[in-house]
Length: 111
Length: 115
Image (tube, rainbow over all chains, first blue to last red; front, side, top):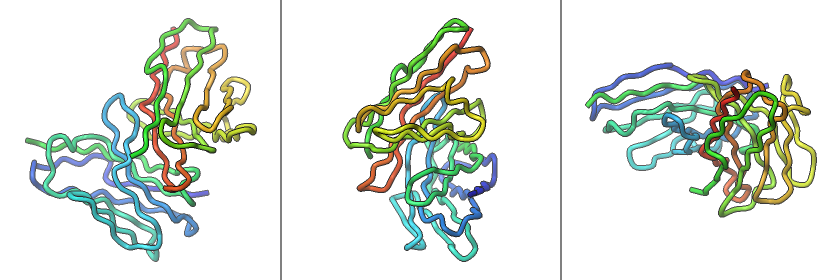
């Protein structure tokens, strides 16, 4: 089955700096890679996703890159703000079916 | 994005009782919904896949007789934790697959505490 690894497990950045979270996956058949933000006591919120037919996608301060050959994808948050503080999960799946999640990254943005 | 609701948001029950959690897709039809369990500071663990009009598919190690899943309509799936015990205390989260958008959206979660 699919195995998704995520690094780092914790990340602290100063407000205004950039944050990068990296994930690798094992199943070359996976073609859908979403990123979720989870705040304390809440369900995961989809913030951006990418499919295997593109290498990069951007939405305002958030971008995701995908390297299919190396089987890794990354989340980039620029100009971080305190409200970006949360746990971020990457996931991989085939066609948005069973999602295989990474172990999560706790991001803290220091004002 | 699409909206998925869960009810109740939190429940406290006595050991031995059953608890039902509802998951609804509010603005799209979901032939497939998923139930996850999350322990503190851990990732989401898939428990089962709920398919409208058919039996749920359970992940290895998840007792189907303890965690009853019903997906009777295209917008509603329910998870019933039967004869709950303290070790069942957890954060239960559902998600719904939006087929046209090929995306999964998550509900806000249900915090279950079994005394």
